[in-house]
Length: 212
Ligand SMILES: *Cc1c(COP(=O)(O)O)cnc(C)c1O
Image: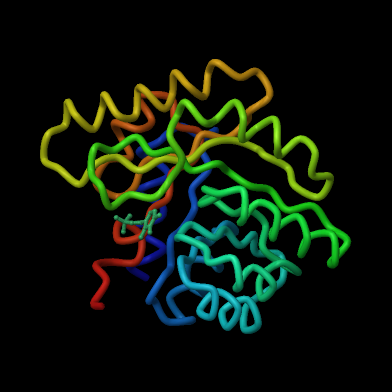
């Protein structure tokens, strides 16, 4: 019952037009079922094998979002069903997603992950590379670039987080044809929404803390 409660508290605390990706990584199937029964349909995972296994066990109207770093050689395992890939960050990955989407005769939605944090550890392309990246993706018929994704630095400094989200939001707003701005996690989604997020990726606020 706790998951249903958490979801309802979360939904009541954010505007209706913001999409919630329930990030269920490491959590057991029964937790996902509880969220599903409460009406949740978008689930996020960061490991290919785990996503495949959960996809096989759960209802087929779930929209599966890959939020973690994706290795090129693993795209083939999720290409038949994944709805959106949030972590597009290289030409090589883009070409492989195109190849596998074509094989499956479908379109795969992708968000380009932009490096906004100062930290060295975060994946993503540099903002200055976006234009070229978008132009290249237009030549790929089975890829739909629906927007951008970014992660703020892991810091207590709320101003820094806000500034990083704002820079991504400005970049997003400079393109008319992008529809999705995926930014904000359990610890920073309120700031992300204030700065223009259209999609938040929430794990622990829904499912509780993860025990790795
Ligand atoms: C785990 C994860 C989340 C959710 O994190 P919480 O802090 O538990 O909300 C969001 N985005 C990505 C890319 C993640 O890996």
